[in-house]
Amino acid sequence: MPDRLAIAQVTPFAWEASNEVGDYVRHVSHELTRRGHRVLIIAPSDSTALVRDSRREIRTQPEALLERAEAEPLVLGVGEVLPFSPTRRRAASLPVDVARTIEEALEVLPLDVVQVHEPFAPSASSVALRQSRALNVGSFHTPTERLLSTQLARSLSRLVFGRLDARTASYEATRDLIQAYFPGDYRVILPGADPPPPREAHEVVRFVMVAHEERAALRIFLRALRSVPAELDWQAVVWSARPLTPPATMGRALRDRVEFVDAERMTEPQALSSGDVIVLASEGIRPTPGTLVRALSAGLIPVASRLPVYEELLSDGEFGVAFEPGDVQTLAMHLSRLIIENGQNRRSPAQLEALRARFDWARVADELEDVYTTLVARRHDRRGSSQVRARLASRRLIDVDLHMHTDHSYDCATPVEVLLAQARAQGLGAIAITDHNEVSGAHEANTKANGVMVIVGEEVKTADQGEVIGLFIEEKIPRGMTLQETIAEIKRQGGLVYVPHPFDRLHSVPDYEHLLDVLDAVDAIEVFNPRVAINEFNDEAARFAAKYRIPAGAGSDAHVPQGLGSVRIRMREFSGPEEFLESLRDADIVRNPASLLYVQALKFLQTRALPEAARRASRDRRVRRATGRGRAAARERRKS
Image 1 (cartoon, helix red, strand yellow):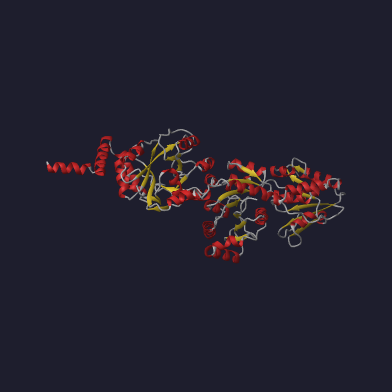
Image 2: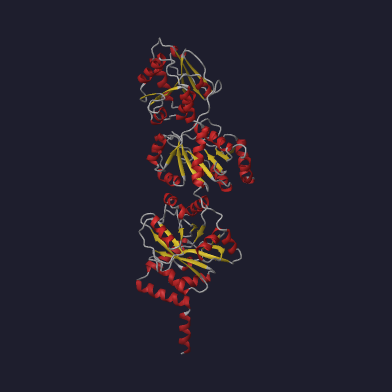
C-alpha cells in the first residue's frame, strides 16, 4: 500500500443531487479511506447547516478536519450553486462566497492530492484547480461535445488545465473526445458498480429504461415498443429519480405494459434487478454510460444506441446489441428478437463474475492509488542533508538576490561597478549575476567584488522552451539548445538549475508540461519576481514549488540598479552549491517591490532612449561615481 495520503475529492455537483460523478466520488472516497488515506469531499451543497458548519470549521479548526476524516470521508459543503450540467451550452457563474470558501480550504489544508472532477469553468472544480497547492488529478467522466465545442474561454481552460499533474478519463470515448479539445495524456480508468441485489425470477421478458438520458431517448423507446408485434408478451419499467408522468400520446396498449416508477417506490438497483434487458436510446446529447455499467454488473442484456461510449462498454457486441441513434425500427427488431429468444441470452455465472470484477470499485481505487503514488514519487525530498544543515546552523544570516543583469546583457546598461556598489548600499551579502546568454559580466564582478559574494550564473535562452538559469557555473552555455540539453550542460559544470519567472506568459518561459518533463533536474524555482506584471504568475510559481517541494528562490531581475534589492532572500551564509541549496530550503523571502513602471522606464532610458555616445558617457559617469574615481579626480584638480 502507498504512503498514507491526504486527498481532496472536488465535485461540481451539489452533494445531495443524484448523479454519476457524485456516486463515483462517494464510492472511491470510501474505498480510499478503508485503505488508510484521509479523504475530504469538497462539494456544493443544498444544506444550509452543512455549509454553515463547514465554513466555520475551515476558518476556526482547519487542523481538525483531516483528523475527522480518519474513519470515513468528511464532506465539506462550500455553498449553494445552480445545477451544473455537462450538456448545457452556458453554465451559471459561481457565487463569490463559494469560490472564497474553496480557496480558504485549500490554503489551510495540508493536502497531498486534489482530484477535481469535470473541472470546466465556472464550477467548484475549476476554482479548486486554480487555487490548489497540492498535486492535481483531473478526472473527466462524460462531458459532451456540445459542451466542449461551445466553450467561449477554451484558451483560458487550456491554461487552467495546464495545472493538472495527471489526467484520467472514465472511458476511452471520453478520452478521445476531450483530447480533441484539450490535448494531453489521459489514463482511462473505468468506473465501478455496486454489487447488485438478487435478480427477480419472471417468465415474461422485462425491459428497463433508466430515464437519465435526454427526453428524446424515452420517446424513441416508447415508439419502438409500439412497433413490437402485439402477440409477443413483454413488460417494461421506466425508472426515474423523480416522478415522471407518462406521455399523453401513450396508447392504452402501452399503458397496460409500461410501468413508470420513481425513487420513492424503488431504488435504481432494484429497478435493474427486476429486469432482463436495459435500453439506452440517447442520441448523444446526454448519454449515461454509468447506467450501462451498473446494468452489465447486474446481468442485464443491453440494447444501446451506437454511441462511442456505449459501443466501448458493449465490447463491439460481445455484451449487447446496438442500433443507430434514432433508428426506431432497428430498436424494435432487437426488442422483438430478445422476446422470442427469452432465456437464451442470460449471462452465465462465469460471465457475470468477469463483468463484476471489471467494474469493481476496489479495482478503481487500485488504479487511482497508482496515479497518486506515481505523482507523489516525483516530489523532491524536503529533508535535504542533516549534516549540511547542522554546519549552516551557526552561520550568520545574509540577504541574497538571485537574479540580475549587467551591461553584458543586450538589454541592460548597468556597469558591473555600479551594480556592486548598489548591492553594497542595499546591504546584500550575495548576488547572482545572470546575464542573458553570457557569463563574462559575472566573472568581471567576481574579480571586482568587495564585501559581496558573487554567484556566477547565466540566463540561457533555449530553442523553444523558454529560459533557464544556471547558477555556480564557470563556462558560457550557448543559446538555442533544447531545455534538456541546457540543463545537462549546467549539471556537467556542477551548477544548479534555477527556473526564472516560470509561468509569466509575458516572458519566454518553460510551460507546465516542459517543467514536468525535467522536474527531477530542477534544483530551485523563482517564486517571486517584481518585474512580473501580473502577480498571479508569481502565485502560480509558488504553488508549483510547494506541490513538488522544490526550494523556492527569488530575485529582482534588475536591469537598472534602482531595482536591486526589491526582493531578497534571507538565508544562512553559504559556500558552494551544496550549502547554498540547503540554506535555501529554510530561507525567507522578503519583498519590497519597486514600481514596475519606474524601473521599466529607467531601463528604457538607459538602453534605448539615448544615442550610443550619450549612453557611453552616462556609463562612464556612473562608474566613476560608483568607484569613487570621480571624487578623487575632483580633489586632485582642486589641489592643483
